[in-house]
Amino acid sequence: MTPLEWEVVTLSLKVSLWATALSLPFGILTALVLARGNFPGKQLLNGIVHLPLILPPVVTGYLLLLTFGRRAPIGAWLEETFGLVLAFRWTGAALAAAIMAFPLMVRAIRLAIEAVDPRIEDAAATLGASRLMVFLTITLPLTLPGIIAGAILAFAKAMGEFGATITFVSNIPGETQTLPSAIYTALQVPGGESAVIRLVILSVILAMGALLVSEWLARRVRA
Amino acid sequence: MSLSVRLRHAFPGFTLDAAFDAPSGVTALFGKSGSGKTTVVNAVAGLLKPDAGAVTVNGRILLDTDKKLHVPTPQRRVGYVFQDARLFPHMSVARNLTYGRWWGGAASAKELARITDLLGIDHLFERAPLALSGGETQRVAMGRALLARPDVLLLDEPLAALDAPRKAEILPYLERLHSEAQIPILYVSHSVAEVARLATTVIVLEDGNVVRTGPATEVLSDPAAVSQLGVRDAGAVIQARVLHHHDDGLSELETSAGRLFLPRVEAQLGATVRVRIQAQDVILSRTRPAGLSALNILPGTVTSLLKGDGPGVLVQMASGEDQVLARVTRRSAQALELAEGATCYAVVKTVSVARADIGSDRAAQQRSEV
Image (cartoon, each protein chain N blue to C red):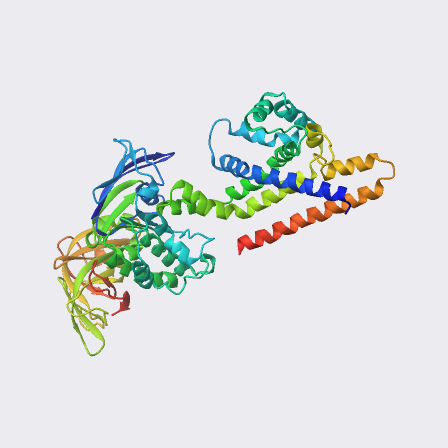
């Protein structure tokens, strides 16, 4: 790998890992609310969660720019309060990837939570476990394969995110140029096919690796 | 030590309105499916919030809708053994058993050893719940409930999902449990045989209402309760004392109705056991039968005749201080001129024996032709 390719791969991994790790708690919470909650506006929440899946990614990216740009209300507040800048930074790439992957993550976890028999949770309650303890000792462990699946799916989606990312944080080498952006850039250069092929092969290897890790994790959890 | 329950709850098309007191010992909640048994148990456990009602265990209020008091399930200290066991599939048997201890923090290692020994599950600790047989699963579920040190034990048809051999395997453990546990036990069942064998008190539920309560011997021998119990299972339950174990393998038992000779009863001399005589195993005769192979003939007077829809008649007969039930055809009833006050003799073909009560010596269940 050339230093440039190495930079692209590590940046992609960094962006995707942060996107997955930070969205996971929210993903579990949202899935729990959607699976078990019963409140007005549940369908609305479900719609909002799924929005990035059905909107054109460019639109999602533009909406992110409108809310998290340096002069946008939330973006300005984040910079003032935490010194956190998202627009045109790798942190913004992580946010865009997390938002785009969120519906897939929530969906996988929600299905797993819905598969847990609430009567088993009742049994734990009769044995003295509080609601939080029931969740931590019964629901969460039984949902773990689904959580792993959701996380891997989100990670893979984050690795491949392009439209929202390039709209929100552009395509800056060393800062926001992830694998798909790098492939896109290489394609614009005449005679860049060999670079494209190399990046494509790297993409395939990373995707396959993620899949194998998820299989291995799922087997370990079940055992 | 007692449990007091008063509940009212409306479901679409079904209303539960039941009140009863369960003394310590085993109280059977008996009724057909759909009569509201499980609803009652769920309300006691706090898994169902009834429209109105009150539940107290040993004076501690678990529910009082008048005072807007609803103690959440984890704080109720109820041991609940579900029909489908509901072991935690991702934990070993040992972790299932000690689950209640995490939060209760009470049961000691000594208690764990005692209860697992009592239930015969100490060799299963490392197993996964999915690798257990049906009988083992229910025993682990019972152990798990007991180890949470409950104030009341709820058993919701723990044998219903098991086949006959598995039932026979578990019943002795249940009996031991009943004599060991010093707490009220609510036992939901629709099996007269189980109730006759285990229960001290019987509460009969029908369409969400309590239609009969009383000591098991009384309720089960009452012909009026037959419509709830089912004709096939009708039978009298009477107390008997073991008088003598004869050398020819028979045990002699004394009842107020007379003496019974049964194949060896596994109880000490002088022990009280409970004898159940099913109505369909009794033959009636107006004169003392002679030249019959049957050993057990009890004299008495007819106290009531209950005609059912079919060709049968259920005859209740007072014999000593006890009641005996016999099921005969209408034709025979007419031929024998059976009427209230008529003297007759009950020829008993088959007898089931169960231990008499909580704390007394346990006798193995025997159902034997004599």
